[in-house]
Length: 288
Image (cartoon, rainbow, N blue to C red):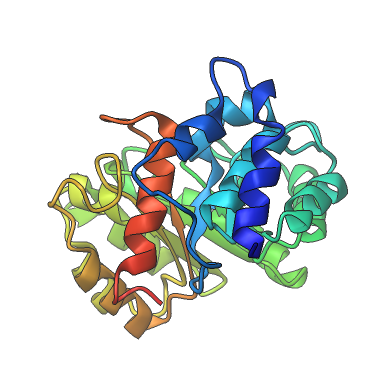
């Protein structure tokens, strides 16, 4: 029995604790079939993809994610110094015992946090092993002056992160592609932030905003070391995202990490969408 088979069988033993039906039972009944050999690719998952299951039983859900083949995770929960109810050290132990790593996180979105909050958050996420701390969204403002003020805030936090050996990133949605005072907000943000701030391009939201992710990767090479790989639901099933061109451009400009994010679940349940997304990337020849 290889490691991935072992993880899947072990996870099945605790799956009954998840409310509303076993997450792993659904995975077992998917079209994936028998688990293949241990994944050769370092494929990450943004944990927002399985937010309800994590709320019900984080340990069983993390075991399920490991059984699918994911090796890296990006968190989406930080509250009063805890991550999914665990201390940072506890959470890192749980994840690493399953053969995965916490390499990124989404925290501090929506509004400014003070320096004391950031100092603690950086310490906590450094303890978990994060390479990136990503602000998942922000109130963008309606003038260039407001956008520049936001960028100054990002620059300050980016310097704090850099001092601790972590990189600050910003994750976009579609609103960043609005035009304000004859400038696209996203372009203004790229121009007004220092190299200490990188951008976690969500390729789906770039397209939904009416822009071309490949064009941005080429134009601002080096600013996108980490990406969100997303589709309408399961990666690759909509047919409207050119993932081959996206991955080729992303690698060429310096991408080192990427995370699957599934937000809409059709026609499958969440866990099956996440498994199918992994399966698509695992066999895609252009994904390293």
